[in-house]
Length: 256
Image (cartoon, rainbow, N blue to C red):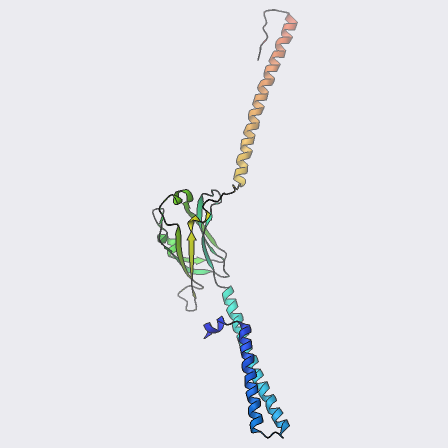
């Protein structure tokens, strides 16, 4: 019954309740006028007013219950965990893809289990054999787990399946608690969805450090070369001075 009520919008519930209330009031009005003498106007009016107030009070009580019930359902939905599973490019190398498992809901997910169909090789085992996918005790709100899956170039050239179906099962509370709610989500992972795309190379602080080191090496080499030229010029000037002082033809001028 609660599951059926939760699927009906609150506005529709209110409209149905108003129609039922108006029908009951009209029926009461008909019965009162039919079985009471027409001359007894004030008695009939009092009876109709009492009926209207009684039906209106009951209708208001039911509307209040529906409002409270919908608000409670909405709060429970907002607190439910929402698990997402997808493949994303690696930040450093766009030819690598990583699995991203994230809880984007309003509460923690307990006893998470994921099954892939078909199962694919991973490292020395398969995806379904990974301990994390067999049972993850807790994935907290906004928590994300990311790990390497495959090199796209190698995967595209292999005969491995390009579409994976995954079924994730998890609970709003530890599953041994009676009030825990089981949630099942299905995912279709299309491994070739990014095939043919061009990627922008992203650089971080490590790349900046490397570029600074290369610049320092370049400046050092330039300074070394400039110092060599200065030494040669200085040596030539010294020879010219000696030649002028001694006026000796035996001193040879050094050339570049």
